Length: 281
Image (cartoon, rainbow, N blue to C red):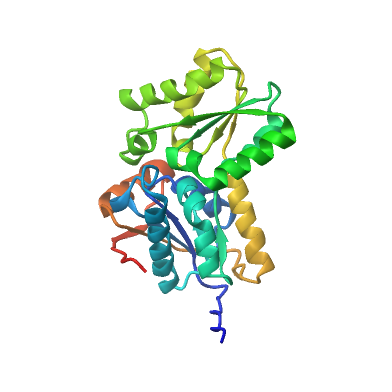
């Protein structure tokens, strides 16, 4: 006996979640491309960071958050976290086969097309770099483009960004520690493999400039937004009113004032923010 799949409504919101504020780098692209779509953002800040958690724990959190977002009648879910995508996207798609579930992954494919030195630096969390999903992506792209990928686990960097310390001495020091060796080893392209990292783009560019090198930086946020748009159109869930600014609402398992501040500082937005808790499914 097959259970009936839920029917999704084009007027319903899109749910976006991350371990914290990193997913705001994805939300800003979605908000810009689809301003008429209602958005719900979920920051699991009370459980951050994901990058050092066991995979089974991340899967459990992702399923619990997805259940919460579906209780808010979301018509699609964006996993705006590289670590959660690597660990849990398959489980989410298996549990919700009729739901549009969009993940993020390091932009290795565009990096292969862009690099001239055939050396690409990948900045990511330990969990992302250790995942089966990343290994499969890495092997595929390395074979297809004869490119060498230098993998750099950026321990502690997402934590600094989560705290709002984008330009502190410690953050600047971490960025230099992780970026400089990649450039000196010949990388002419850097992949931002964590959704937190676009928020320290200025610091990354400062390091590159100090080394007097020309380096391309890959951020996949815009590509994720375009992919979401295509899926909504294909499944007839694109919002019918294209000339109206839609509402943006946020939830967090951490501090509502911290998330409200992050929205203001990082995106210049002021959504309503509520503190919530989610139980295991």
